[in-house]
Amino acid sequence: MRVIIIEDEKPSARRLQRMLQQLDVETETMLHSVEESIVWFKNNAHPDLIFLDIQLSDGLSFEIFEAIDIKSAVIFTTAYDEYALQAFKLNSIDYLLKPIDDDDLKKAVAKYKERLPVQQSVTLDFNDIKKLLVNPIDRTYKKRFSVKVGQHLKLLTIDDIECFYSENKGTYAYTIDGRNYLLDTTLDQLEDELEPKTFFRISRKFVVNIEAIKDMVSYTNSRLQIKLQNYKEQDVIVARERVKDFKYWLDHT
Image (cartoon, helix red, strand yellow):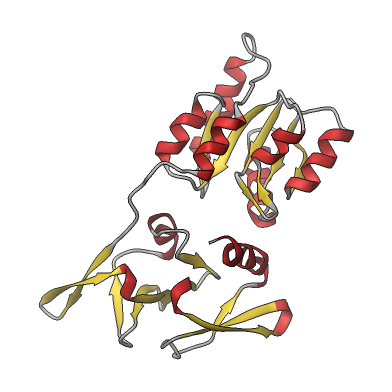
């Protein structure tokens, strides 16, 4: 079985490669952009199975399939919500929500192998996928948080939050009035719950609101420092591996 991974975040690609190795599935190559993938497919025999992220650093992955007639089976690896993915699933082997779970990956690979006798390839209708991505199915993102203040509960609206950050194993919301509130969640969970056009996770420690960004300056080791409207408790730094995605997010929100 010939397998490739198309994923712009190299740590995620390597993690998926290791997980596949544990299932005795070897990865032929890893591709990280639309452009790189198109060149590769033009010069190589197409694989049996593609593990495909949707949003790559230089565009959406359906652009690959607009340029190349690919019949490979596809397993999506994505953070898109389950409603849109139900449509994808009709034309693909399976989808895996990030972070990928070991059992889910094992089931997806097994599902592909089960289909081999009756279906060697899967044709994806990427025009339908494009429509879903350009005009995604409405989903409900977090609009407010309830936080405990003493013996009382207080509601924080999402528009009042400049950033979320982790500290001492806790997750906090920092509001425009300069207050911190401890939340009963993690930054990993928040990534899937927040409107992606408004919030971006710049590092393991911070998720920032685009409306709160006041300035951006170059920082050491090819990183960026973010200046927020009110938050000044510690430096807000875009991790080096997130800078490219962060700039893409700024340009496309």
